[in-house]
Length: 531
Figure 1 (tube, rainbow, N blue to C red):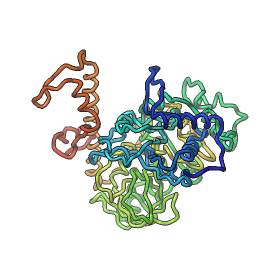
Figure 2: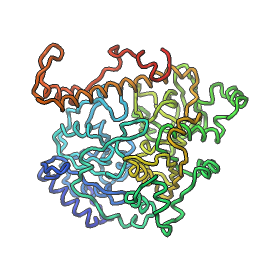
Figure 3: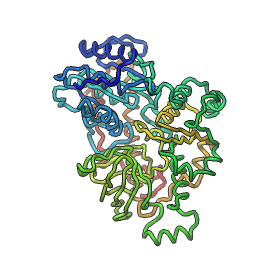
Figure 4: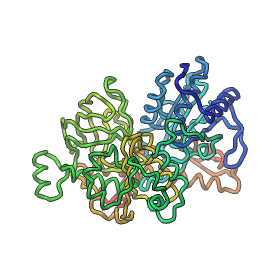
């Protein structure tokens, strides 16, 4: 493959390269998983931000023979696109895990609770390289390993794990990223003195007693303060929110309820959502629809990769942000709008695309999708969660520190800070989670025409979660059984617990949510609507 003469590997990268080449030759490696020695077909190499993990992939591809067929993958479209741009000289296409290794089995995806089968045709692939390994779930890895192809995975275990609790964005990482074979420990020379990376490193090591924000304020060396890093209070943030909205590349937060609250305030400040009934009625008369719905000039973020678009425009990735330039049609009764927009990373305007309106009033991190590939899913993008920002980079990041503690608090702030290229501002949040939830502006004003469509989406999320929880409960019962070979009657035939455990694997891991197997009316009370 292409020779890279401009950059020379550092000692840590040289060691990693030697290990990777040996692994490719042997097709396995002796490693330790949870303190247990194992012979593994997965080689995981970790490294914090700035240690050159993507550069290491370039070095590896340069060393490989041209006849070795390699699949380079990443968990999300945006991450795959970013890595693909870095590997342009290597003439390698970077694909998402789901487009290359795992096949969605039906229309439903609820976050990382994804029902899929393993793709059968691999076209002679001899090696799989996975980037952003911290974003890959254990469930996905079990499916990928079924291909029985050697895997080299790179990632940063300091970053947030894939979310499982969608309301509070909490989750767990796969076993390999938490047990890497080695860790890159040298920051690339051009990044060694970056104050943002220094802050990220400090976040990982600081002792947290009350909140991470106060721990940083009390312990961070004042001599390291630069114009690149700022700490501000909640009062000053809201007092000068116009400046932050105009100057920041993105505002990040922890909870979805905070995202709704801050997006509401942002839309008020920008004049899209008036604060008094007279002004609301006047604007609604001018628009011809509720001001709660998107308007020209609004910033929106896409919630799903969109492949069915003119090749001239290219793919719109999950996490891409754009600004509406024209409303062609607004039809709340059909849950649809047609718009033109300008993406932040594209020169040309994208014209005449359709978006669902219900997704502007549901949890964007739920990841729930439907089968209509020609209709996009998007929501307001003045403020997004840190989880939604993963695999993205922004020049100027403002982090609203609504998360104050918890198991993943350091990973959360580390991930947020390392999204920034030039500047990061940490905003102290004085409100508790309950106070944020009780704020009237943290609850979307849903136009009455949209209510049935939002109701349908929310029901699908609840059904998916319920079925997933049932599956996990049964698996737990199987693993706790005194004798896993005990037989029981399932669908009028005797099946051992061990056989049932196998039945839970990916080939049969399908739920039909489109039929009547679940009475949807039983969920009406949960979401507060009548059928």
